[in-house]
Amino acid sequence: MSLSISPQIGIHQQYARIGIDADLGQFQISQSPASLEITTTPAKHDYHTEGGKLTIDNSAWRDALGNGPHLEVMNRIYSKSQSIALQGIAKIVEDGNRMAAIHTKENAIAALAADSTQDIDFREYMYMGDAAYDNIDLNYEPARVIRDIQPAQVHINVTRNAPEIQYNRGKLDIYMQQHASVEFTPPQIDYKI
Image 1 (cartoon, rainbow, N blue to C red):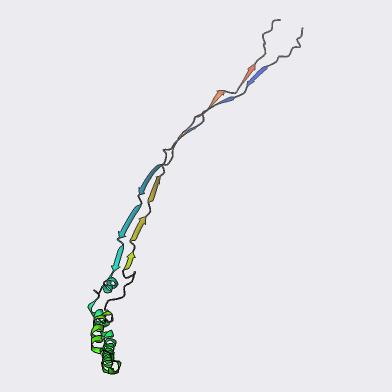
Image 2 (image 1 turned 60 degrees about the vertical axis):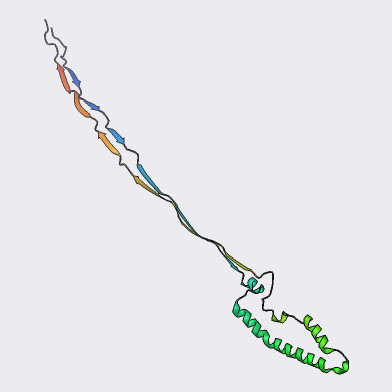
């Protein structure tokens, strides 16, 4: 009897398998806020006032009342004295002519005596100044205000805080999860005849 069965070998192959276990790295970033330092210099106002000045000049008023400066009074009298002397001489000549005019039949001496009481006039000896409504001079200088203003100043100082960065590395594990293998299964050779 002859057998025509040919033996078969069983081959089973398993591929290698690599296992990778990875965790991502982590960043931890923290930063304190910037610190501000603000200082202010207040404004400075300095005011200085000098008082106003009122000047009253009443010398013309006093002169109009006859209490003027002595030198001015004497100058006025001196400047009028020549014309007063000439007027006096003219009066004497006129009175002499009246007394000499006997043809008029006038009692010249009695008339001159009567006229002499009315003839007293001191206006030519007026040594006072002119009387006027504006004899008093007023002069006012207003007060001066001296200002010194220094504006306020603001100083800002900023201190930056650098960020704090920490990095925690992740893990990376590479391992053989399954090794490659080839398995041969021989045929069954045990036959019974």
